[in-house]
Length: 298
Image (cartoon, rainbow, N blue to C red; front, side):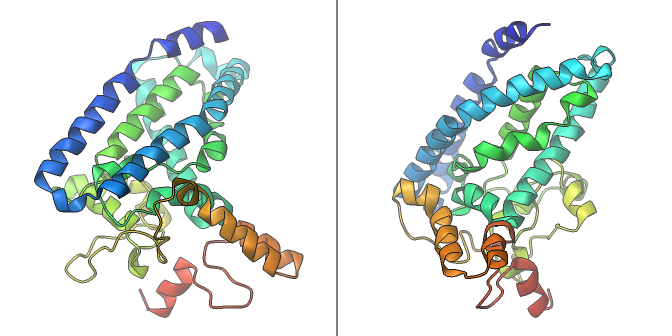
């Protein structure tokens, strides 16, 4: 197929039209059962971040779709991998693996964290928080998927699978679902695992980056179990921003990086403030997640 054919098929995709009403209906249902988990200003910011991220993502998303198309065109595997049932299974694992590393790097590189941090800025854990997407991360997101079309997967398949993953992830942002049966908890990302990911407790920082499968966290050493009897998850940031100004919510960490870069004298320190993990400091306490856990023997 030509690029125009793929774009035509993409324009006919109804996944988003199906998902958005389901999201909002689910939020209303959750609100009826747990009104205390919602705060109107906080939910309003979450909805604004969703709109901001969609606007920022538009050009990178178009560019990525075109890049995926041309990468797919040059691979000899394009005539081997089609839309067979087994191809969708392989793509599921490839997509989820790409998401894990994209998400993990967003937490471990401060420049990328600045683009992701709006998603973690709410002190509430509810389905509305799922819509509080990172804004700046939309710019670099698709680079983590660039290897997949070279395996023979076409761009429409990829965008469909990415959409399925995001729909799944929406439903893990809740406190209404306790732990699921052990086999599910072992393999899949669940509300319990994702509560850990949104917690600011030192035990839980930078853990459980899963999209759909928690197995990547187990394999690569970033898994943490929810221990709410010992250490109940506290949501938000280690230092909360305490503002409902949408511009500040979307950009506050970029401003913090800029201030740290200006304060540092050595170029190596300036670069560390940009590319090292959040919490690194050249003249203060090292507050990186791994360092803090080591101090507490966690």
